[in-house]
Each structure stands twice: as structure tokens, then as C-alpha cells.
Amino acid sequence: MTKILIETINLKKTYRHSNVNVTLFNNLNLKIKQGDLVALVGPSGSGKSSLLHLLALLDEPTKGDIKINDVYTKKFTDEKKDETRRKNISIIFQDNNLLNDFNAIENVMMPLIIKGENLVNAKKKAQTILKAVKILERSLHFPKELSGGEQQRVAIARALIAETNLVLADEPTGNLDFKTSLEIFSYFLKLKKLKKTIIFATHNRELANRADYKLLISNGDIKRVNAR
Ligand SMILES: Nc1ncnc2c1ncn2[C@@H]1O[C@H](COP(=O)(O)OP(=O)(O)O)[C@@H](O)[C@H]1O
Ligand SMILES: [Mg+2]
Image (cartoon, rainbow, N blue to C red):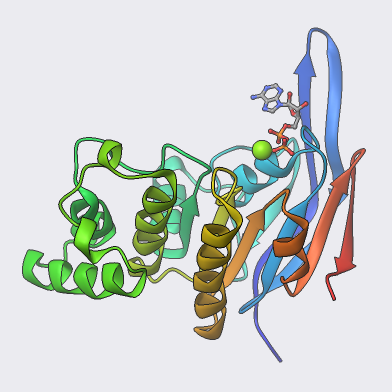
């Protein structure tokens, strides 16, 4: 049986807006397996980003818990959360993914440098991956010298190099044309082949339909919908 990588247990998220509580979801019980490619869909404001932040342990649930690799995370200290994230999770946001003061290859090397891997090895690995995402020739460009699509590819390369089992992507193709979006998506398929789990929020129906299944959030409810 395929392993459950991340699980939510009676998860609830409520925000307080000028004395009114807005509940994004309640009693959410998700089980997401290793190798699942999941599209998170729903109208703007339905809670996609909030859910991704919770799954990334970047925010606290109002109630409930999140299990990663079978371990409850609610009682984790901030250090333990950082460590769990570093070891298990790569995050790709819609924009502002890259460190502006570092060039493309340095950005990609960053997860390995943080892990303490030696620079020569880190650089070799980064070059291999930049080549795979077809952007090796931009290695020395700084983020502001790259197009949106190129920046996203560098961010994907950084997610790939980290070799984490979970990739969370918040509208990663939101700023991109369809052809580039398909390219980005093809890297998700590669990650899936490597048994990585990818959860990506998207407004793009075509891409969502190519996932293994969709999670549809709307009006405080989350439903699993088969994509095909
Ligand atoms: N930090 C916050 N404080 C208060 N309300 C928030 C906060 N973050 C998000 N919200 C509210 O939660 C709802 C869902 O937001 P979000 O998760 O960003 O939705 P989506 O990503 O689906 O567009 C929105 O109504 C938003 O205004
Ligand atoms: Mg969002």
C-alpha cells in the first residue's frame, strides 16, 4: 500500500475579520499519498493559499492537526517546524520565489548550502538540474534579469534539487503563458515519477484536469473530485 505522506486531522481554519469569524474549512480530513499529484482549485478567497500555508507548517490551525510522515506536528517548536520543512517540503509561490541578491545558480544551490553540502558538489548538481529545466544558459542572471517563466523554472529547479518528498506550489503558473505553464507542469510529472507528492493551487482548468485528482474548496467545504 502506498504510504500517506501528509494528513490533516479535523483541521479548521478561521480568520477574524472586524469582529466576524470567517471559517475557511472545518473538520478537514485529507490523506495525501506519496506520489500523488493534486490540484487545489476553488474561487479566489476560498482558502487555497491558507491551506498550503498550513500544510507547510507556516501557519497555525485554529483546530486540528497535521501529520507529516505519520508524525503529529501541532506541538512542534518553531525550530522543529523549520527542520521538518527543510527536510520534507519545497515551496513554490506565485512570485517572489527567488532571493534577489543571488543569481540563478546560487538560488538553486541554496537548499544544499543550507544542508552543509560542499560547494563543488552543490554547483554540479545545480548545473544538472538547471540544464534539465532548460535554463542553464541563464545561470549567472539575477532574478530581475529573468522573465516570469524563467524565474519560475529556477524556483522549480530549487525545489527539485532539495529532493524533498513534498512540493507545495501556490499558483506556480499564475503569471505564465499556457505553453510555459505546460512546461512547468511537465516537471511536476517528473517529480511524480520520482514518487514525490505535489500539491498545486491553480485557476487553470486544463492543468487541474491533468492532476491525479482535484481538491475543490468552496464555501468552507472541500471535496475530492476526480480530474479525469
Ligand atoms: N492573515 C489573514 N488574516 C485574515 N484573513 C485572512 C488572512 N489570510 C487570508 N485571509 C482571508 O481568508 C480567505 C482565504 O484567503 P486565501 O487562502 O488567500 O484564498 P485563495 O488562495 O483561495 O485565494 C480570504 O477571505 C482572505 O481575506
Ligand atoms: Mg491564493
